[in-house]
Length: 189
Image 1 (cartoon, rainbow, N blue to C red):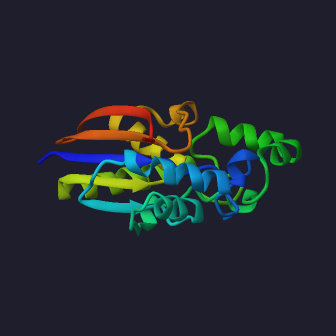
Image 2: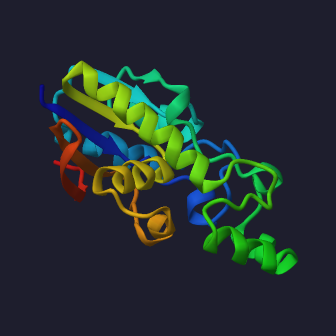
């Protein structure tokens, strides 16, 4: 049975613009407007899902999608770094940031290691493929990265080398664990 997954990255928020670890801030007016404008470019789906973060839920709503929150598609838990900018954390804990970026098993922030996020996303993907059909999910960029790594059977060390711009679609299609990948398609009319 063929499974199709379209993952949409959320629209711009203050956190993204400031390179801030997500703090639950709402989308900016420009991000909401861009999502509304992109709505006609969304493909139809059998299921609509979202990461349970403010920016993903707001993006889904602005796209006109009634998405169900899925805990397994939640953002990477960055522990005590939440709400701080990368520059702030790097200035205060440069060795910790270096270790975190270099080692997928590291979690110097006290939250979730990238490795655990990748395992969580891979388990969700394996379960979701059993449904067949088309799924559209508005998900955090780190979920897109983790799913792409799984689909390509790429090492976790490649996690930070995948760029996921706002309001782009990353598409997987396949069956029996063999995937075709299309990345970075901008949404829009």
